[in-house]
Length: 283
Image (cartoon, rainbow, N blue to C red; front, side, top):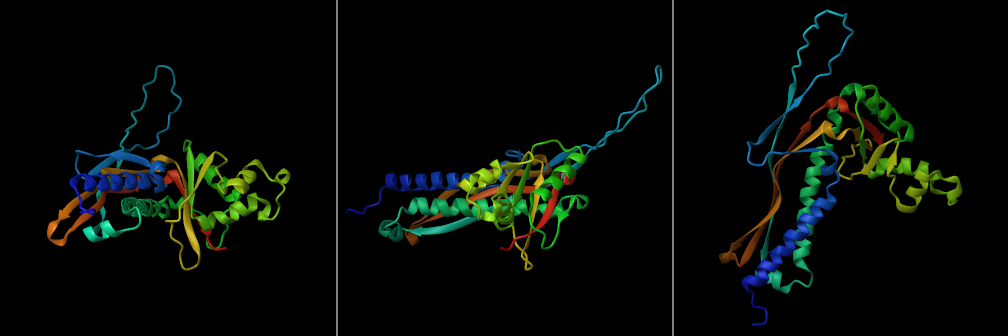
């Protein structure tokens, strides 16, 4: 038969799914490279990250003993759990599809797992130290607000680099301002940063803060969203088992189960190493 399925063709099909899924996951996840990853493969499902306090040094008179200073770190515990997605691909669907079904399934799986990872990580922004809160309901995202965040973190002796993540609709006002409200097409009156936005749509970096957009940040009923400016060490991602694709044949159904999964957890390591910024996210 012309459509006879061999073990070789099935193997090639799922190799394509795996390749496409992993590529899509790595390319779609905005947050994963912006936080600190702890690999706990071969360990338990928890990782306890020591958080050391800030201590002060003082002047000492010659010949005098130094007073003992205790250094008692606290712990930030992150627990990993499973996240997964499954679909069943029938033989008939596989053989009759007019599309490259392997790439389609891989892309959908990669996107779904990446979205879950990002949603869980950006969901930690509201847990940054309350003293570092900036913005507010109806407040537009501006360069001034980013400068406030930069100054807040520097005043706490938080080392650079800093990264910022906001919803694309929150970034709209900042981009509009940088490009002269989007109406002036003369590059000579637009700042280099604004020109980059005008040409590419990406802000890039401002004040030493790398800016990113993430549509997985939720927008509340008042059209506000919570973004963040933070040091990568402020958020931890524990990986028990990285993203993978597995298949299992169901002969009686004449189909194959395709499962994508990841074992991960997330948590704040240093809550004062980040600022949550509440901003308007409506046009």
